[in-house]
Image (cartoon, rainbow, N blue to C red; front, side, top):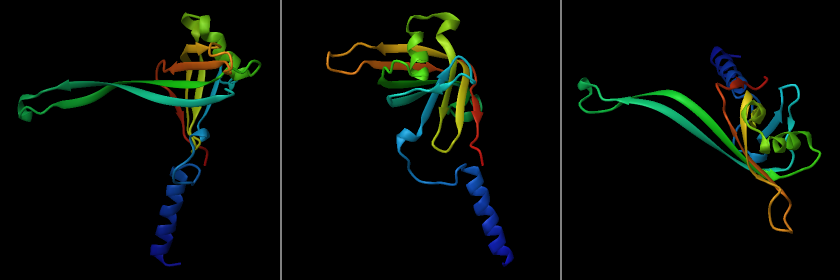
Length: 164
């Protein structure tokens, strides 16, 4: 192999390593997965979740210095994440039961481990995420009972890159 071909191959290998699974392109949202539990060791997938959305809240400090001709300077100084998940109540499922049990809890009792696994294998987790239950069991007579909740970040997350 010529030196340029070797260099090109090494760059391709680094790109595959960086992207985790080596796959590229669009993906179905069901490849996102969630786990919940009292601890990381107890965490289990949450059955029958149907949709989710993520909201990032960024604290940005802003100031106007004399030397900037009226243009703003900005510095991101804070972050938080809220993950809103909707699905069905599944009695007897470990993850689903763990989340539903938070409905009438406050303080430390309304917290627990939460893990979001991205399609590429990246994991984002919190040891003491806040669980805020927004819907439980109540719907039309012919509907399956809902379980809807927000998971709110509580401190800096642990971000684990995908395994290579």
